[in-house]
Image (cartoon, rainbow, N blue to C red; front, side):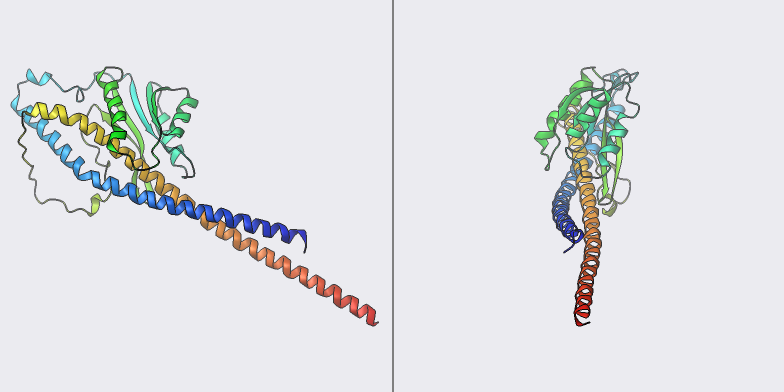
Length: 303
């Protein structure tokens, strides 16, 4: 059989092998994406209640204290006069094959970052910041599976220590916020000093939830005191925000990888179809040429 048909058979076998790999990666990414989305949904009610408590405490303190007493602001709430040094936590994947997501996150983080320091999460984030010549305060390996609270607590504690210790004037997080399987938004979120809640953080499934009727604000009874509760709640709120960001980034990564592998599988199917059609045509042409040679030889012998 002609050499070109042998080459086509080799390419068909190779493309089928690649298709098996991309299909398997697509299924794995889909499973991880569902777990990440479920983890984000499960943490939302706790985050909502924590923010309601913080708002209730700060509001009661403003109403109950004098102007002189209001000067004692919690370290995590204290706003600097100038933001000369900004610490950015950059969350990026460990591995590729997830489309343009890593490039978009890194580009957003490095944009206008002349006075920034970085805490990187994920190997791609570390490599990009080092190539840009920026200062890395600390690096954490990315999360392949679902993170636990105790795994993200060390990151949150370091961010808080950098801010309360006066090493930086503000802390921001750049990450990919999960919207849907086909969509994510690269965002830069202000973490410290703690201000108003980012309305998009932890918004998965928010549109399907029933909103409470009226404008009733829940009432809380704080023991031993609102200040003591605030001192305990704010560090936990920072930890929860860091956890939520990492879960959102993981969901975006896995969904992007699933879509990318799905497109690669479809492209492999198209290539296999093209190669098979070309192979059949070449094989038919070879058979036709052989039949023509046999028929011509027989006619020559008969003559």
